Image 1 (tube, helix red, strand yellow):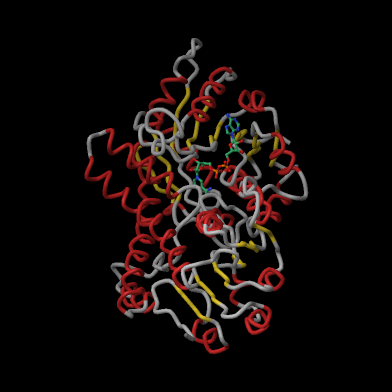
Image 2: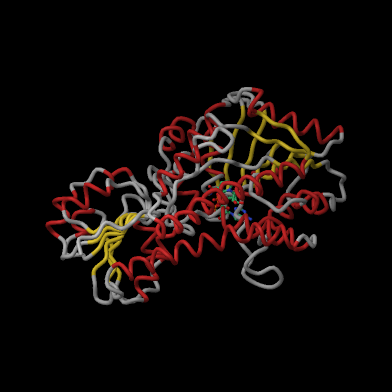
Length: 458
Ligand SMILES: NC(=O)c1ccc[n+]([C@@H]2O[C@H](COP(=O)([O-])OP(=O)(O)OC[C@H]3O[C@@H](n4cnc5c(N)ncnc54)[C@H](O)[C@@H]3O)[C@@H](O)[C@H]2O)c1
């Protein structure tokens, strides 16, 4: 079959895989190929067991795969054949040298730019899909324009706003798609080509066009605002615990103000995921580079509050359980950083588990989708940790349960049965405020929730 255009995506991760699957499903006229240096990942995308879990993803991949969606190890060939290249490689926080711990590590990004340059015989549109520091497009242009043959490359920024756990839904019905380009004739032409791709299923008024720097900065800003709301409500949760105010009641009252809105106001053990912390620290680093120290400090505090909230959760567990958890069995319900994903990157559960292990607790981890990733993350731990998918078996004989991911299954468990199998006094620390605390207290649990007075039998 003759396709209208060849789209390539470099990077078959949490963003590249689902994004390209949806583009392929919605645009049968385009050939979409996804490549990655990680050959195992490519094999998994070609198999029955996809490398990531997202509701609805299996169906959409199966529908388009082999028709106009292909996964491949042949990066160079893919580059050469492509008209449009989405770059969706990882951009982690730098761990070395200048800006270590804050700046984005752009080595994968730059390697990709050079690889595109080395393998292109014709002009292409390069789409920044990864989240990047503002003005990265400029660096990419400089590398691409090193070509002797004067091949025309246009760099467009199209940051991804999907949220893990609802990626397919977010991609099929996005709040908006943002496409930024240079405001030259060639830049605007390239921008329109990307608009044309999305216009196959996204209403035109939801496709926002902007200059390339605005698009780059909007993604960092959106993540900073989202994380800021969580840190804001979490900071107030600490005050609620001191004053007998209830954080859910406060959040409801505050969120009904239409200027504020009720989303992202759920207090919790803290935010996780691969993006929020990394992107805010990146924003902080950029601000510092421009000498905007007050702005940098303002945003850095969002990350600091989050770390404090995670630490506070462990300290509250310790204080609640008579200042010692040594030798006690503690069951962690949920290791994923949020529900409906197997992703554990920067999950508060990592911090809490390690904190409990330091206190010599025996931690049992349960999660419906993230156990394999949890095992890998805790590989260095010699003793004190075990894994059990079944929540009832995981809780047997334990002194406490900590709810760290808001999986629906944890709402609906038979907690009377669980209580019968636990040591006494039995504790529940609800790090997501998803359980019926009064009911749990009534059946015999000592209940500690975020931003609420503890319910204790002693
Ligand atoms: N995960 C999210 O929810 C999310 C949401 C929006 C934006 N983002 C951004 O999207 C980008 C990708 O995130 P992700 O979660 O998909 O990361 P990921 O680590 O899951 O995937 C990145 C993939 O890129 C591959 N890769 C790296 N260098 C490569 C190269 N030179 N050639 C080919 N493949 C290469 C890696 O092997 C990996 O499979 C990041 O910048 C992230 O900030 C992520």
